[in-house]
Image 1 (spheres, rainbow, N blue to C red):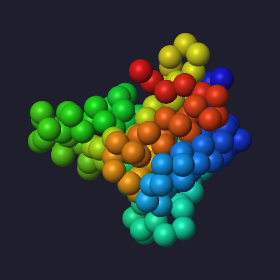
Image 2 (image 1 turned 180 degrees about the vertical axis):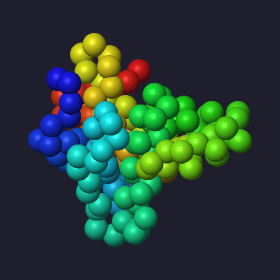
Image 3 (image 1 turned 90 degrees about the horizontal axis):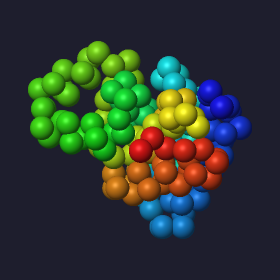
Length: 142
């Protein structure tokens, strides 16, 4: 698979939402982007705050822009805050340096898109993103 089709994006969102319900997480918002950073699909759970779309897209888009998960971007921000802060104005979707943005790869390890989840703690957001990717039968970048 060289891209994430809408049907798979819908499965990612359903799987991430299901994981959120299973764990009793706060209302989640999930964005699925293609490899170029374009939005394929987005869902916001009832009760999610109003800026969650931008945060979810920023986590996924930032991961794609730098080629690493948003968790790693967070580590980079702690080590090189000026560098990561300067990227915000360059990245079309912004960059959110907190766990929850995960790159989706094909069977050869090449990025085909990314998932961004926000709403609970960053660690829980990442757990939901990974569950969504797995539910769609896809793989996360390692």
